[in-house]
Image (cartoon, rainbow, N blue to C red; front, side, top):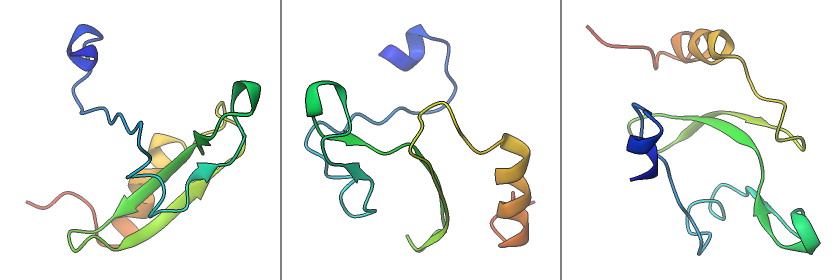
Length: 83
């Protein structure tokens, strides 16, 4: 798998049929090369019940939430690591 070859320790999602991006309103219509639809850059925190608790959206793939920001937010929402 691509993630294994790259040495990643987390799963990657391939969503060519847009089944994951559409429910979260993350489809950027005509936002890709030659006007193709692409997923919007985003980070989401989803609780164990499947409820989206935090979203960071951007129109620029190079702009992302910092790891420490995501971790602080997860802790504030009670989604941090459990003992």
